[in-house]
Length: 129
Image (cartoon, rainbow, N blue to C red):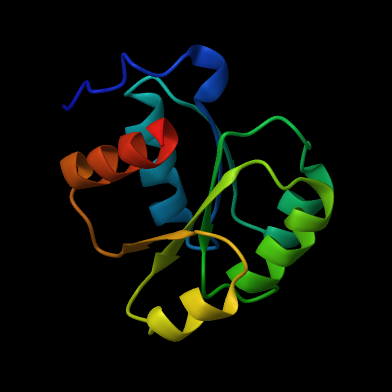
């Protein structure tokens, strides 16, 4: 397993994962925690929004397609409460170029499926920027 997380202070390793596919969310939580991140995972975006803690997370990983609220809606609601965390959207193939121009800030996209090592490399690059 990739252990490329020594550059990140512990306080900067808090991640919120929201994905309504339980197996994907659990996989993300397991891989990230196994590499030193502190992860809160929610499979329900409405509960994630209700429980969201401003000024707490370094990174938010949000699935784009969720049933109760899509990742972009969740992103917009969270941004009303906290503009600091970096944002990474999980995509299963949605077209991201049009979306990037719509958003008012730099966001990142991870295309599913992805291998553990590549995921960790991307997450460490995002967190260290």
